[in-house]
Length: 601
Image (cartoon, rainbow, N blue to C red; front, side, top):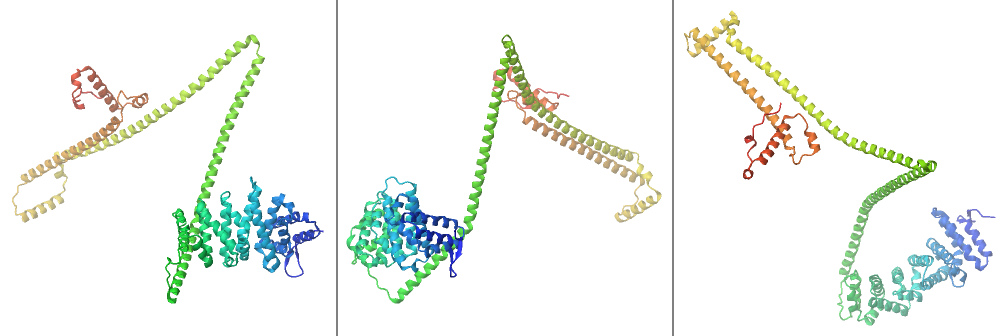
């Protein structure tokens, strides 16, 4: 009977029922069936990936029922059955190490001190065995990558495993294979770096023979390899070892005296910082200047280091905050560009597909027409075949001619449409000009009528007859006052009348002159406007040599300026052709010196 997915133990801790069922199956199963049963744990963990709480419950249940020990046992060489099934091997490796990340394995001293180190050593041995395969497939590469990734993470989670990794002969042998597999060698050096960094005492407790062999191999890589990554990893690991143990620093000074000269080949390739440190380590004790600082100076140096660390952290956090503001916008712009490019590609493919479909439809229609034509030819009697083909040719010729005539007529229609538009515009301009001139003439006639009326009134001397008696008395009083002020008495009435008449004539002459001046000014403005319009037209008129049919149709109008320009150009050509050659050498006269041409009415 299947257990429930989640069941509660006797205590408050929650357990996974499926894991418990697998644990009960392993107790009753044979040894060769255990790896296949353990593989079912991977299905349970994959099913719970979206729920972290239940995933931790399942991993805790695996740890509680000692299934991790069975995984370690399955990875040892005793179970040769899974050596031929690398996918099963990879599944068990992932189950083992992923559960170790999320549970506290230190609760079991036996597992943490015996089983897990055995799994680490087995993993290193398996990596070395897989590395000896001549033509590795995808499964081997994936298994090898998973093992390297788990080793790197396990060292960080459980630092006490560092000594087991450094004591492994397989680690040194994998590092030595940098010529065949440089990437694997670099990864193993990084694992060794991580082990030395997380556990500072692992160098002290490690066997001196193993550490010196590792140092010899790293120095050999610096002298023989040409790979910058290998050299960088080797130099960094040597510096870490020398810093954590003064004994190995002294050993480096004694054993690698000539290494300082060889290190010059790596200068300027991104290793300057570690190279300088390694060079200082390799300096003899007599050369290195010993400086003794007081306690106050040491405290100040420590305070400076702390302040500098805080400043670096603040600057890094500020840079990360700026990146968090900028990166989303860059990502959004990039996604928008990718989406736009994808839409453009879809449109292009759709357009290309439509073109292909149209071409295919055209070919199918042509094929259907040919098949229909062949069927029709089979029906036609043999004696009428020639006449039938002749009728088809004539019908095809008629259709071709009809299409061609329609095409040409559409072209001519466009030209006529343009000419009609130009003529219509010219008529509108002429109509507006005529209305303007009509209003101008009407205004001029009104002004002439007013002027004639004023002149006739002045000549008839109607002003004095229209003045009333009271107004006359007022004027006489004003005159007398003016005479008293200006001391002019005794002016005769005839002299006054004569003076009035002369002043009236002067006024009439002045207004007549003003009227003629206004009329001349209006005529001059109208003439200038006409000249400017005709000048604009003449500037864009091509010569007779450059004239085309389109320009001829455009100039075919009733404009006097156009006709005058054509006649002038024609006379110029005739004069140039008929006159002697020596006159052609002279400069052309102005247009005013040419033969007078009367405008065409």
